[in-house]
Image 1 (cartoon, rainbow, N blue to C red):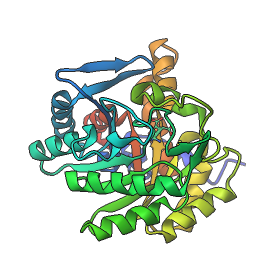
Image 2: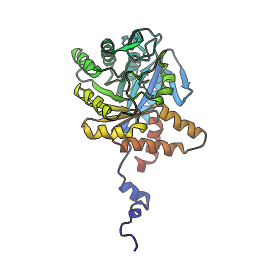
Image 3: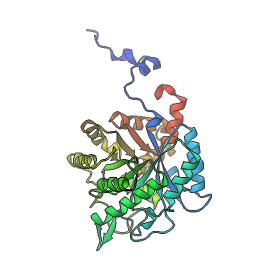
Image 4: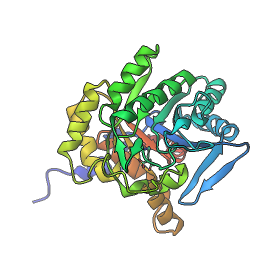
Length: 328
Ligand code: PBG
């Protein structure tokens, strides 16, 4: 008996495939990360992240303009301060590195969406995401500093703050501080579900944020847990998060899907540094077709339910999607 159903009919030509394509990647959904550092004319490539740089503010502004030319409209910022201290004061200094970068970008590119990562780990001498006492990362003592950080980022002109410290109650603390300071309009993209992942390795080189003792497992989530992910998402939602993020992306596509189905706010997924580094390494060895693999992975994140994808591949993806509109 010849088959009655022939799914191959809809795959015969590119026009047919385009007509029946279920998931589309669009550059409007992409967010490009930046690591801003002190100095002038600094462009320091991250060894484990080819194509990603520590940029001084002047170079960063140039890169933002170039990204805008490619059609990218959203960026997320991380900072490397001049100096680190016990309380991460560089994170909430009015003229901190991220605050300066936000102001400079804002001046040059008017229709740019600026997201500021709200955390202390790049700014603390010990490299943890909160206040440390007797080897413990204290929760409630950290909330006030995270809230101050968010307010100073909003003052500098951030459209969205993105708390990533995984302290309990951080979204509520930030929401109320923003509101008190007249930033009711500033949105919160919560790193709601952030796992204690090996895939952040290259980022810690880029942001110089490796903890000097211990690790982040006492505050970031345990990778085997899925129900707990929904509990974390629920808490951040209840505390006023406008966007819920899952991080990393590809090892946690089941979680992206689960959060998508449970909550009716936009879901973001962070395709993190280690996920990027793996692709780059394989591509550099000639082991995979980088362009196809990168688009396939970004598409899988979208297919799992992410509305927003934060990725170091945003630039390349924007170029590819431009060149081949059928894939966008
Ligand atoms: C800050 C932060 C980290 C990342 C984003 N925000 C590092 C960490 O938690 O160790 C990781 C991003 C990446 O790996 O690309 N807490």
